[in-house]
Length: 387
Ligand code: NZQ
Ligand code: ZN
View 1 (tube, rainbow, N blue to C red):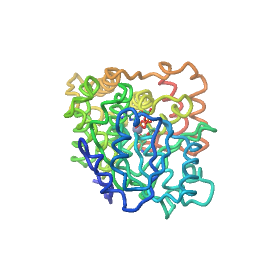
View 2 (cartoon, rainbow, N blue to C red; view 1 turned 60 degrees about the vertical axis):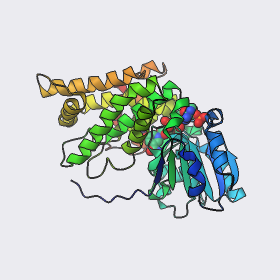
View 3 (cartoon, rainbow, N blue to C red; view 1 turned 45 degrees about the horizontal axis):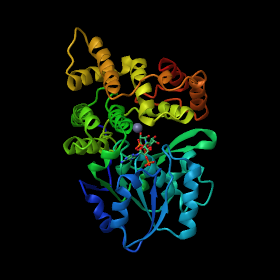
């Protein structure tokens, strides 16, 4: 195994009805910014539970954080934080709200152009940050237990990642019953996102970290098993709780320990959301299978292992099993109602591959992926294969 250091300080409070524990976990006496999205929490009872559990605190609300949170929207919250001297942020929502709050945490005390925190990676250097916690409402991103985030600058259609060890939530409340109000589209998104996070850290090349592979395969198999069940009946607590924990485990830092990781699918896919507004998970379903085809020789051994262990495939040859493993992945996404071609989502794709090329070049992204092979040219080719 590769050497590693690991610290994940987020306290997870997991289970039905656990939102009531908010009061015990927000630092006493805090003036809290309660941040949320477009209002789903007001319809499904989560907002009421949060308000009931926080009546001892001074609360200022900030709603309207959109999916793929906008820098421009978040800057309105930064102003409130500074003007009202907020000292704790509570994110109530999915990945977008939690990521948005990570930006607020970084920007609150930053004296400069706040977009630089994201685009120039300055978030990592920011010493004074505002602490935050979360109530997760959508299992998908793992943002509730990691220190990364993705923010979009709407004015330039740029979607960029940022983070740093300062940005772990202090706590996250993960109540699996929250998924009952999720539209099927979002449940499917959550399954595909968690599945792809696992593949990004698993489908690379052979290494010595036996346990890491087994954990990844366990998450993939669990998602395959419970995916159809949560789609069919989100009130099935056994399925919902395993879904929620799988999504958290897929991106809380455990899977990457001691192993090579890829992440090129995500970096290309973010451009499809930035340019076309396609849901994050769906952009992964568009790019991942084609990236595996493009890098077939490099990933072949792992594809065979994945095919045999996760999908139970047998076949004439390793090549056949590896190819079938990619097909099974696509079929799984389709079974959840997730389309896998760019043209299924937009007809405005003529310039997309070239724009991805230009952006990769501009950012000097010349060597993404586990073997640093994905640069502008290959990213462009993968997008062309994905149309
Ligand atoms: O805005 P509200 O009203 O909350 O509605 C949301 C939104 O419309 C709705 N929703 C959430 N919980 C609900 C609910 N509707 C009914 N009942 C509930 N319980 O679902 C819609 C999508 O929410 P969003 O937060 O955008 O989805 P998701 O959790 O998939 O987050 C996507 C964002 O996270 C980023 C993505 O790029 C994207 O910007 N990611 C963050 C990562 C991280 N921090 O580690 C990693 C991921 O790879 C990903 O990039
Ligand atoms: Zn993702």
